[in-house]
Amino acid sequence: MSADGGTPTGPVSFAHRCGQWSAGREVAALETARRIHDSGVELVRVGWCDTHGVLRGKTLTARAAIRALHEGVGLVSTLLLKDTSDRTAFKVFEPGGADELPGFAFASNLILLPDPASFTLLPWAPGTGWLRGQPWFQDGAPVPYDTRRVLQLALARLAGEELGLTCGLEVEFHIYRLKDGAHGPDLDPDLSAWPGLPPAVSLIHPGYNLLAEGWIDLADEPLRIVQRTAQALGLPLQSLEIELGPSQVEAVFDATDALTAADNMVLFRNGVRQALRRAGYHASFMCRPPFPGIMSSGWHLHQSVSRQADGGNAFVRAAPAPGTTPADATHTLSDTGAAWLGGLLAHARGMTVLCTPTANGFGRFRPNALAPQAVVWGRDNRGAMLRVVGGAGDGATRIENRIGEPAANPYLYMAAQIHAGLDGLARGLLPPPATEAPYALDAERIPTNLPDALAALQADGALVDGLGADVVRWFSRVKQSEHQRHAQAEDKADFERREYFSRF
Image 1 (cartoon, rainbow, N blue to C red):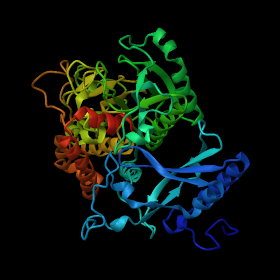
Image 2 (tube, rainbow, N blue to C red):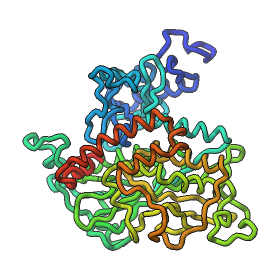
Image 3 (cartoon, helix red, strand yellow):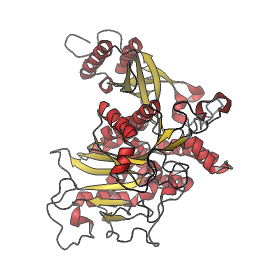
Image 4 (cartoon, one colour):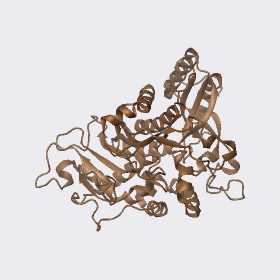
């Protein structure tokens, strides 16, 4: 860096070529390099969140990681083109196979550039650090299919309206005990397949005793691992709870800005799966694990919009609108909040596949199951797709979207909320009255399968415009590959055991 902190005096780094260099970043890089050296870290994982919300990346020696802070590290571009089985959905080696994806032909390299401010020590892996990276083309241009960038662009659009998004995470998932420790049938070379066999497991609690303290005690060891892992990663964990289903639990986090919340979700899923595996447990964020008697897991996304001017919650109103009843949105929400709610309703069908992206997740949408089935909202109604929580004068007033599954890519999930909400604001949409019958037969239905959900996204003009037509086309192609294989599978349950239970 130059003496005055302005521009680099030596060779121009990749961070500078892609527009990510700044004096502040240089200071953060120097501090991270010092921490790597002083902590005795031997390896640093540079992680990147793929289309399906799974962390991938490179593991570097400490010396190479310090260099990567400035120059990045090569990453095969087909990682952005893979379906949930790791098959590449585009024929990148055939003539014209990547014409709609400039820069991806022949599995060319991208550059994964770490954010030095993201450095953390992995509590379950001694001598190992971690950095969050984002992919760039080799010429320094951004990669449009990087899902974190998709959310960043959505947030920039929201900031243009002088607003921000605040999100709280409420995540249900399952924890099982591995019957063969960390070396189950999925690690037997004689049984290797693509995808491989799922691990053999047993329950950590028998279920059907919601919030039972006895079951908390029974599951104490794995839940302590979850707690300590989350807190060591700096995640704002609020509570761990016993859910209704066998071996099902829930983690609740304090609200943060949307980008931080999405980053936290990626870190949480990755961290608890790895830490639990080392201790002989298997954590699954699959919506409906492949066992009889299970309960579906949801990911409920609490959201409110903040004003940039003062940081206040733009959903709060001082008093109910004159002449309204509790069934009216403006009885509880500000005009901004009501229009945002209207946008979420108007684009509910289109956003479904961004919130519930697996073939397995659609089995959750059934009546009387604390899961949504229809495009409706309710006031503190857990059967409705959108649950409005709070009231006039309550600074915690928010909308809870209950449509998501815990395997969803958090960046796409949250970007969908922004583009839907902004359309509601632009058109001044007023929601219909709140439902008191969330499972009524005459209500508009959420899509019930992956192809219908993809079609609904492709037909939603506001979401296509907001996300970008190229992004929707790319995402649809990747998910269509998954659907085709699921449709062709003779044993759907076996497909989902291998495809989802082992990997998500």
